[in-house]
Length: 121
Image 1 (cartoon, rainbow, N blue to C red):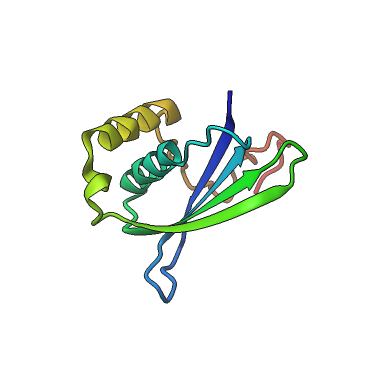
Image 2 (image 1 turned 135 degrees about the vertical axis):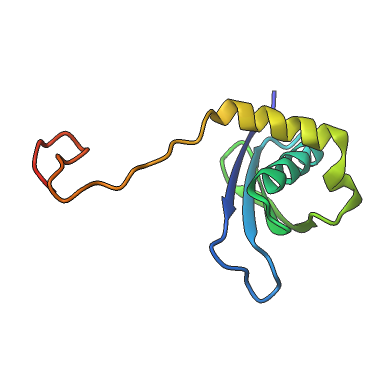
């Protein structure tokens, strides 16, 4: 089995190349590397985050945890494959796994600290 991990982050501002998201994928193994699945996962995250252009970084590691290859790819929401039904299904799956969005309310001046210290703010 291949050990893969993915980290996705929306940027607060677009850079000079209009990139508004960053995705870093780590792939551990020298055989049977499946970059295509990670690209689909990135498109699904782009859809959820409403990002238009993302820089995807693929880091390939050997068995000694040394980086043996680095692949950069710019993905755009205007790409044909970004609107693929499989991508949309993956996005819905990711949305359901993340659960409901937690809304935070503003803490009042005389309310107790939410950290549990029982001190007033």
